Length: 398
View (cartoon, rainbow, N blue to C red):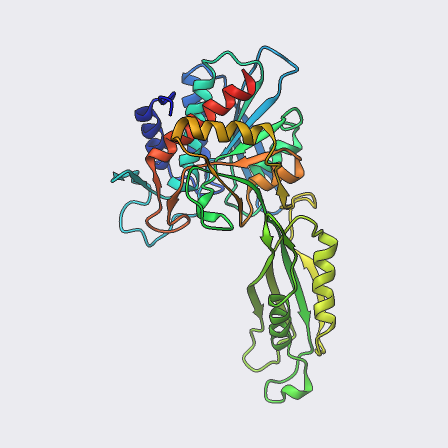
């Protein structure tokens, strides 16, 4: 094991400061200002990158980006990506959800694990790498709206060309807690399933509720569709495991004595490499066609600001130099070989690994109760992840 390259006290102080700033998705402005100011105070020349989505969410916000320029234009560029937003503050907390309280090696607060621990690690690692003699570039992106409906921050980075000259990416999400299998840190997650969201409209025929046989009940038929999609045959992959489906919403009917004429159904579909949007639509349509129902059924996908906003599955090759550098960094920093796993759900890493076609690894500090009351992150793992990023960055770029 090597000595820590980042200052543990400074790292935890930064984490505490970040957690004490409420930043639910779409409300990240104060946190973005803090991140920008912290980088600016250290001469790291951050910039705001504006994110606008006027049509569906009416969102306006700013990513924070900064770049370390290496000495060799032909050397690779490493992206360090972390999100500044959290889920909406959960009411069940028995203390201030943004307290940043530290006890027994755990720092508590909404978003402490998902993912301000990872954000703090990225920031201090970036500052430390600025002191090293690097041939390649390091791009830091602290993004908005990862927890929101569309991942607008990283989506906008890709659309505006920030990833065009990037060769590989690290996202510091808390990997083990959402891995396909039981893992503990140190761990590297080398891929993730993708996701589609079915938006299904079921149209029946209205009638008086006392004579239901004269109509076609859209709610009843929507229930049959939900059951069929819940039991849908899904794909499998040797690394990513099996896909899954989960009905999330069934909404229809409102009048007290009328057969419901229409119902809406939303169903989550997690997919693996090899399952396309066309496959996913055809699977649903075939399953519905096999049902004995009279309602008309239309299968669509969730409305998005752009058709290109999709969470595709991806897998990073275990032999990629980024993986090797992080494995060696884990040995140097923790004294252990990292476990290898794959993420169960989706996030900005899907945009980077699939849409931007970048070798992408998830490595981040773990904790418990993410998205819920009592969320915490292990402070020692925040420091270890920061040290691993410095060690891997130096090996890849120096």
